[in-house]
Image 1 (cartoon, rainbow, N blue to C red):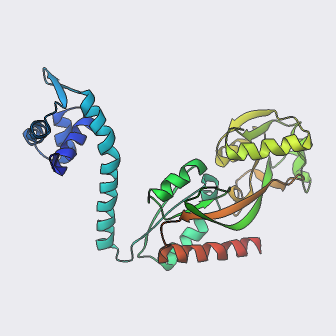
Image 2: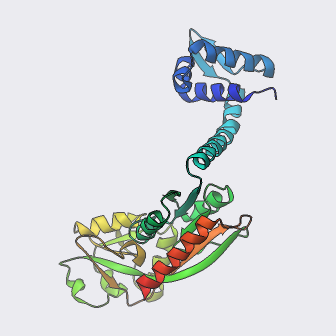
Length: 298
């Protein structure tokens, strides 16, 4: 290997910090050590990686190309290093998962809490991600399991629907429509509406329902996350339509939830890579998640 791992590390550090001194601080080594590594790399590769002018470093076009390739590879190397350290410190291993953002507000936290209580030696790595990024996360082995609030269609993913739900209306506590058992889209259209942007999947669902009902679509505020809608409604900015999972459980202060007369159904799905077998951690978590759904829906 002409471009050695230690040289790659030094090169990446210089690109990130913009100087030999910055790279030395990042790597906890001396500045001359970084300079030697970069010099040896340029010599063995036969490439000039940096133009030097009065102590200032400017990456060459070749350096920019190399950095684009090294970045993802180095991130994967760090992930493997972290896995190795986890295996040493936590023999039980880790559970890596992601979900749609709205599921992190009220729906998944009780399940995660129970899992951590029953399996204290397992490290849980959890984050939210957009529907469009879930395939990349799973097939890139960044997570083992994704929980989606909307369907995903991908040939290399196994998708298992496990719960159904609905879009619901949320209103301020003192709003006149809060006295009703259900609210219609035609009633909401007369209010100041906080709605998902119609370019995202939730927005497309709601816009289609408005169209089917023959009700004009006139949002006062476009949002992309359920917590934004809840915060705005709780502050009296308007009324909104969100998925029921974002406002279930403890809900939101100052917000009332009412069903819609026009049904906008949802299907929660478990999603994993077709090329990976679910680990015992995933199997345990899925069992807990399904039990939680039965309890909530029961």
